[in-house]
Length: 156
Image (tube, rainbow, N blue to C red; front, side, top):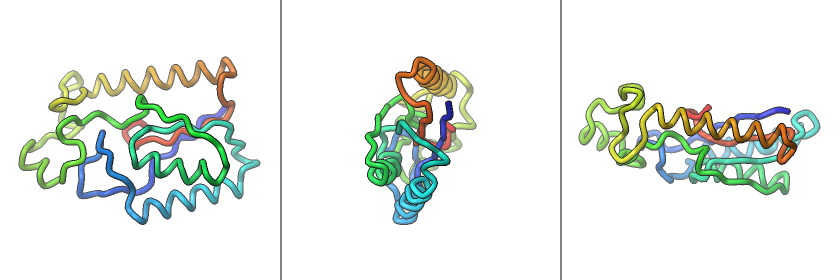
């Protein structure tokens, strides 16, 4: 059993990510295509049986390149989303600094939530539970045995 973790392709750096639904930039789309091609050219090495992805646009665009190349369906799951940064999701970094000065994931206390979002502890618990469920499904042969999970850097 193997779980391959893949971060989505390059997105818009001038915006806050989190639960934003912004897509990839051209470079990120090209990265995703190259990844899909590499995986396909080495399919016997990776032997991917299952594709799972966060349902946010930047991961959807990334995994779709792989899905199309392999003619394999994707299971999209909200539980594999990045940290829910609430009111900061998708806003310009300059606006975030102005409206929420000093507010970053690493400045939150473990139980302190983003405005209308989740706390680091809630994020950790969500990912831990999702990982546990994924492992259980693999152990019970419901999926896999080789899973590619396309998600976000915070999750990884």
